[in-house]
Length: 142
Image (tube, rainbow, N blue to C red; front, side, top):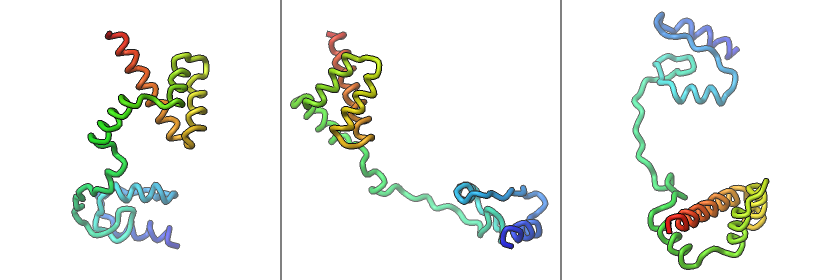
């Protein structure tokens, strides 16, 4: 009954120049449409509701959690310079240098075993690849 009442009330309360909105079956899509479209002041329809101005919200500190700061990046860079690579990181570096047919996969599997998660393994692989490229650039320049 609710589904059909949408058509009935929408048809009655819609002005002639308003575009007719097709019903959407999935709730996710309906929510996305509702959040992107402005409300039109009608009692029924996908974008029903009183017309208001959206309030601009300023960013909260919790929204930047986990983002790499300048100070932390500098500290990590200095620590890497002073301490060098860990033994397992040196093994990954050797795997990168030797290459082979499925080097990326082997590096990933090794890093995942050592670090414990998919995300960390991928990040470490990219990190060590960056170290390798910096070393190669330094050798090429010097």
